[in-house]
Image (cartoon, rainbow over all chains, first blue to last red; front, side):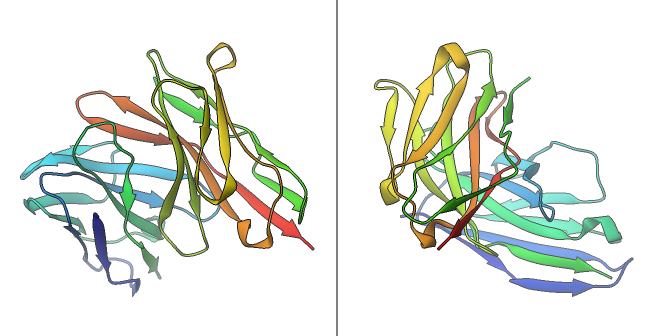
Length: 113
Length: 114
């Protein structure tokens, strides 16, 4: 079965510092991959999705960027964090048929101070 | 554009009582519909999904959902709630627009009282 690993689980960063969150996938190849942000008390906001290596689609303008250097690796980055970047970041994937349900990683709790 | 509305931000039910969480969607074609559950500080787990066929879908943990095209709804139900069901529940619709994406509702927080 598919598994998504995310690290770190929690992160506290100062405003203006860089960010790199990593997501890796096991148990499937060529998945569609997604980054979501979940702010406190709010739903999931789709940030980026990728259908393959080097292919990134951005859903909302923001201070973040994403990259997919390998088939099973998806990275979320920022050059300078803002207070508003705080939140719970979830990596998710879809494998096989395009209409399968998403499988999620455990998430990273980011606090920007 | 695709969207999902969960009108109840939070719901409180007594343990053993029945539960219904509401979900309405907007999508121009036949929808792919999902319900996910999220325990505090965790990722999301799929409860059930609807792609086609029987409009009453059975899921894990005793949950079921009914797709009603005329009402654009996909409400989640459980006949008897357990304290361990306290969590946040998300309704979602799958959209095929240049790649498959899942659009989530804002979620409903379920509280269970003894």
